[in-house]
Amino acid sequence: MARPPSLFVSHGAPTFALEPGQAGPALTALGRTLPRPEAVLVVSPHWLTPNPRVGLAAQPQTIHDFGGFDPALYRIDYPAQGHPALACKALDALTAAGWPAIADERRGLDHGAWVPLLHLYPRAEVPVFQVALPWRLDADAAWAFGQALAPLADDGVLIVGSGSLTHNLGDFRGGHGSELAYVRAFAGWVREAVAASNGARLRRTLDEAPHAARAHPTPEHFWPLLVAAGAAPAGQPWRMVDGGIAHGMLAMDAVVFGQA
Image 1 (cartoon, rainbow, N blue to C red):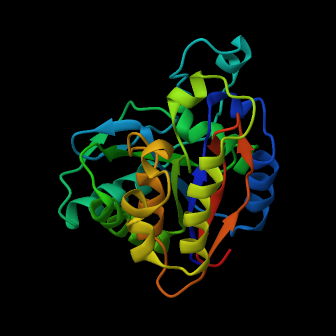
Image 2 (cartoon, rainbow, N blue to C red):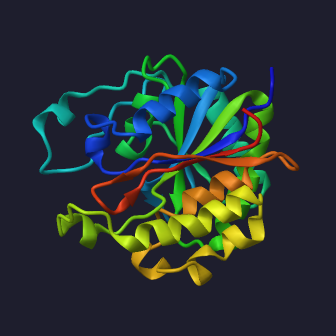
C-alpha cells in the first residue's frame, strides 16, 4: 500500500455539512485521488484534553456538539466504523514518543471530524478514529505531536488535522456578509509557506503572519495544521486545496502534505 500523505482540512462552521460551498466539492475530489486508507485518524480542536486520549470505539457515534443551528444538522449521522486495532497503535506511538496518552472506549466523532469527512468520504466507507488535541501546545509541540503520530501512516492511516485556516468567532457572530480583508492577507502568508514546503515559516505563522491575532484570537483551530505538517512524509511537496472563504471570514482551504 502507498503511504498516504497527511492532510489539514478547514471544517468551518457546522453548517458546512449542509452548505458545501467551494470547499465541499474540493474535498470530495481530493478524496477520490487519495490512496484508499485503512483508516482515518482525526485530530480536532473540539476534543481538547490535558493529555492525549485516543478513541477506541468500534462504532463511534456522531456527536452534535453545537447549538442553535438548523434542526437538519442534528439529524445527520456519519456511520463510519472505528478501528480499535489501529487506534491502539496510535496509543502506542504516542506513548513511545513521550506523550502520556490514554484510551477512551466511548468517545464518538465531534463535528470537527464528521463534518469535513461528509465531503471527503461521503459514503463513510473508511474507518475513523479520533485523537484528542492536548490543550497546552505551542507551535513546536503541535509539530512534535504530529511527528509522534507519523508512524501510523506506514500502516495506511490517513492523518488529518481538522481546524480552520482562519477562525474568529466574534467576526462570525457579527454576521459579516462581505469578505474581510484580513482573511486573505493571513491565508496568503500560509499559502507562501506551503508553496515553499517551509516548515519553519509555517511554525512562525501566529507570531509573524499579518493579522494573526485577529485570524486566530485563540490558537486551537490552527494547531491541527501544524499537527498535519509534523506528520508529513519527509522530502515530499506540499500543496494547497483552495476552499474559498465562507461567511466572509472563514478561509476554508485544505493542505495536502505529501504525494496524493
